Image (cartoon, rainbow, N blue to C red; front, side, top):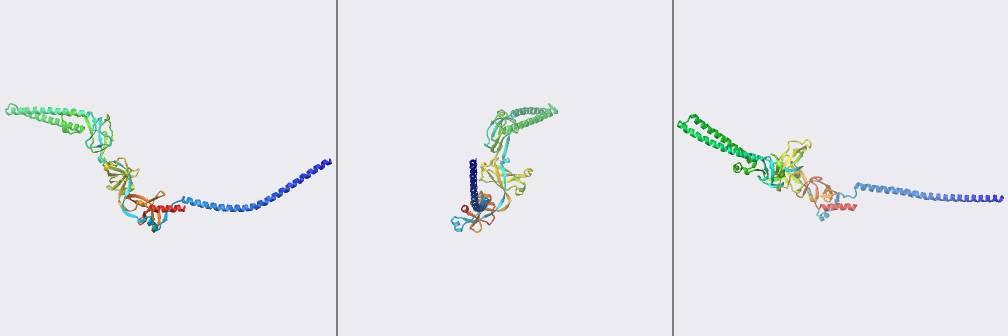
Length: 441
């Protein structure tokens, strides 16, 4: 038992020694680690603080750069550039004062080309009937009296029959008058030899007068029927005789003036009524431009004002015209007044239906600034000219363009009389300005 107790005591003693040894090692290691960590942590804290300060400065600098870059919208061209006189001479750069002219004020309105109704005919059917032939198509040039189509109508047969009856009535009345004249002459002779009474002689004379009146009525009826038939057939009344009446059965549809066939509204076999519009023919040597002018601009226009008409089909050609009508009523919806412009149309280039822009010259005049078109350059989608006050420093000035005339453009905004601009070598100035921008980038 004592041996067993001694063994247990020795075991416990060994275990206690081992535990103390581990605790001391752990305590030493912890102290060493803590001391090193504090030492290292102190340096690290300082480094971290420096890193934070450096990072903040770097972040602020980047933010400022980013903000500046955003405000500038990326690399853009400077609007000024300095070019010494000797460089200007080598680049053939020329500076001149802007041109100032006294120009009539122009009112720009939109319009549409229409037919001149004074020279337009709407050819209608003059009788009920059926179209038997069509001789022309839209676009054809026709002349006055030319047959455009033919029409078969019962009115012709009825009128021919009435005229034949009128001719027959004239013949009957002519025979009756001859018989009455012979009777009058006989009774006059008998009365002279006292073989007839005065009453019989007077009655014979009255019958002659009655026959004469009836013949006159019959002749008038012939004349009336001839006129009616000649209108239908569009021929001279004198050409209608009893021998040729039945040879004329078709009514011609004729052009009443020279011009272009704008519309054809009939086809072969179509039945039409009196007054139906068969063709539209217009002389396009003159056309109208119909426009609308705002109420506020009414004081700026008048009859007889000169107009320049421009179309999309012929943008380089100006068609001169004149205002021939200013409407007397105002459209309550659009607050505009209709205006009619008469325009000569040589070569018939202007066609009905075209859209047009009309520049109406106003009575008043204005001082306008003009520059050569070669003086203008495009920068970032803007039309600019280069302005200088001292002859060496040039600034890009955005301008708004008005009318153009023989290589010169009117500037309605951006320049004023007395300004000096680059009139030759503007492209070189633009290149120098862009070169400076690229160098800064």
